Image (cartoon, rainbow, N blue to C red; front, side):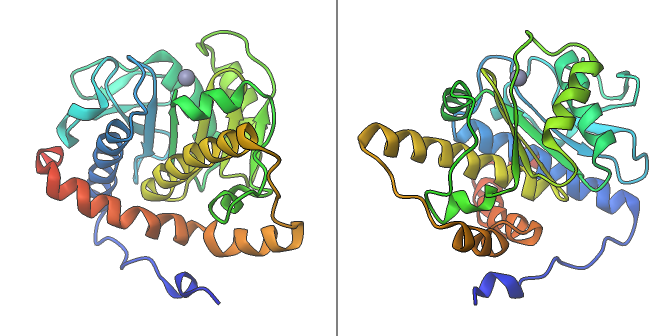
Length: 255
Ligand SMILES: [Zn+2]
């Protein structure tokens, strides 16, 4: 059995302030990584982290700031009405419309990530779920939904609510047709990792289908593999080497 199943989360935080700082640091690191992977597209994209004390508030990137320059001190706190209650800058209205509804519908989801990454948005135009073509893609087997509609830039919470319904009560991701990917996690680390590996799973399936007729992993084995590579703790653990790398390379993200 996979060694990854023996991995456990670290100790609980000693205070809400410590938990908040931890989440904000991982959130800033996730933006730097999204930039490193080329997931930025102008001002599009947002990753959110629920505040540990005010459960209907979340931390998010300031609108119009490049992922690659975001520091902990740049993050803004948004309340359930979309008002910025901490921070100097504006929030993207689409970020509020989508993420507020996802966080409301999924109380266990600490974080949600969305960006207009190239392979995710390319795959999204096909209106299909990902197939279990690789071990990595099995993380999403039976664990992602399809928002099979496109109605313009999401500016209303009613549309965010429809996206949250497509995500469903247990999935870790949803493909937004003609738009891109959205992932959630019970940690910032997991939500960011699911986005990174889902983007690459989209790339892998596009490459494989362009080259021939790929052979999927059989359903029973795909379901087993999902429990091995697709658990919340596996998502958290997979992020750790990326965290170590980006903090060493770009320590100013912690400012
Ligand atoms: Zn978008």
